[in-house]
Image (cartoon, rainbow, N blue to C red; front, side, top):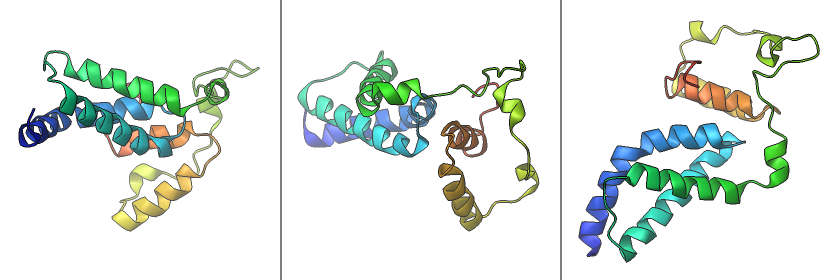
Length: 149
């Protein structure tokens, strides 16, 4: 495949799959800070594959998700996978963990400008519980409902 045709095909695939793949990677990652690295590694791998062979467009999304899965598995060790805690797990009193978080700030009432978003995002990413930034990003940046998340 010539480089120009390959670049056009890559750009088309990227445009059609990047948003969905970003959601998928964020959900699967243990730490949201790793999502961009995994996304870049996935598309770099796709670029290398496109330069070696011609792929059919029929199952391209599934193919890219497969690449992303391999990158995610490589990225995280078994110990990191064992440390994940579900927000919907229950404690000794049969209360879901998500119900134990106190709402100190009503974020929906705040209009976030870019600088405010960056400050808030930096603060949330530093939280010990790595599910908090994932849910925050998926809800406020990608406009997914809690049910979808």
